[in-house]
Image (cartoon, rainbow, N blue to C red; front, side, top):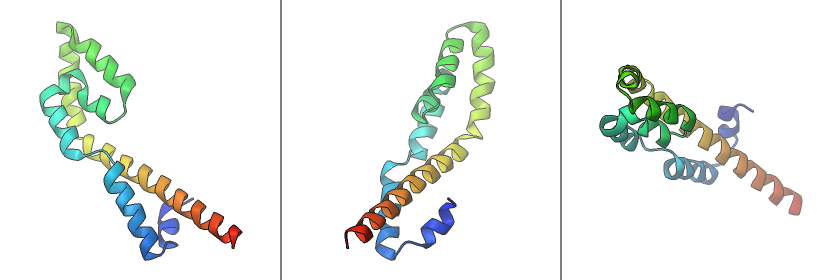
Length: 112
């Protein structure tokens, strides 16, 4: 289901509920950037963003000299990807919230 069509189907109160859910549940860019800045070569920003598999690989690589040669450029590349990950996370939470609101609306309609 296209989330823009679903979002446009919501009334103002439902839109406010969805927007609040996105604001409260989404990953914070400031946290991701601080983790990247101070613990980036260990993959802390990836752990925070839910990319656990690659975060573990990055952590293990960082424990060796030769692995660090790989981790540092990887960390620099991640600097360009963090904002996209934040946006994806917000879109996912928005879609989940819209689905919940529409499901709740359907349950109300069935009960009436």
